[in-house]
Length: 179
Image (tube, rainbow, N blue to C red):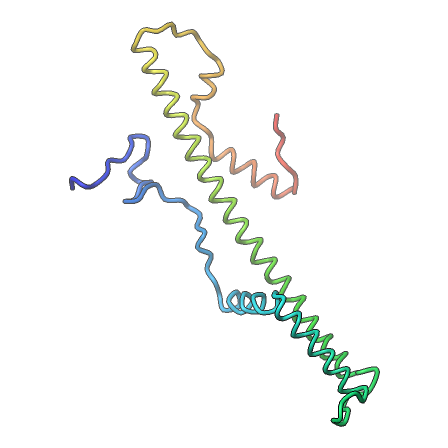
């Protein structure tokens, strides 16, 4: 028990864990088999090595089929088998890229949620520190003029209102007013 760190008073026990406040969002993005297959495709197809292999393959294919090789050609000019193979391969690559972009979009949304939650926690902590500092200031009997800006900064941030504004702006695809 002596080794256990005492949590600051402004952190609600419900929110706190042994390592600190828990975030509602998680960067541990669950990977489905589709995600894993897509990652593998992107890691293989998205390299310079793969590009070089494709170029070598195409050069060998074309040289073989324009009689620059002692082996009998199987796909004469205009190379219909090569065209079909490249077309199918292009479809696979473009779909892989689209799947990866969707996955990256999901990851980015989770990152934004985590960043938002961290910012909200920081706002809460700063508000608490300002309140405590103001209380110390008053207890010391220092001249405590009414500071409207300080009072506004000490107000609790309405998280529900922020979420509602974000949801409304996402629904209409517009950014919230900064007024």
